[in-house]
Length: 227
Image (tube, rainbow, N blue to C red):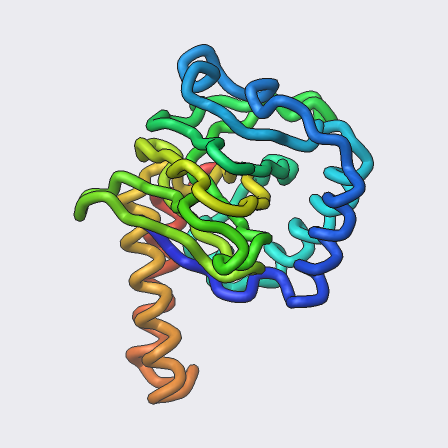
């Protein structure tokens, strides 16, 4: 399931992120790559432990907590602290699949990567190329979103970042361990949740259809959810 999340960050928050990142130190992006993806990855990254990454990560985590689309689609149990990358002229990330398990140093814990998220910080007019290309069940999806918008997709998907032909592409990326690890089940719950919102808006919370649909949603979540 691929879900676009508009305006995850406000314009002011996005501008603040770019300003802070502009003063940050950048290192070779392969520091967080697995064995296979290290050969495919050609970008820059802010060190995970840097104060800039931690400060901006808190802003993003706060925005995620308040975003209904993210919470309905990801059903998050744990979120990896957001990381930040940069693709300059000629840089790219060839086809790869994200590591299944990530270690969260600050919490001394491991996280299963069920969902991948990319939050675009650069405006699309600032660079040519740099599309996020995700292999989906309906073919390859090309994603290049406005600044402050995000895309959520299964971490099991093969994906790549096309070469930058002009300018520079800055973004945040991170992973989510979902309460429902199966993407097909998450999709069903997300579609059911959207239907519930439409029925509630049309008929009200007390209508028997609203109550019945909500009951079905929560019973499925009980059956499929893991804590």
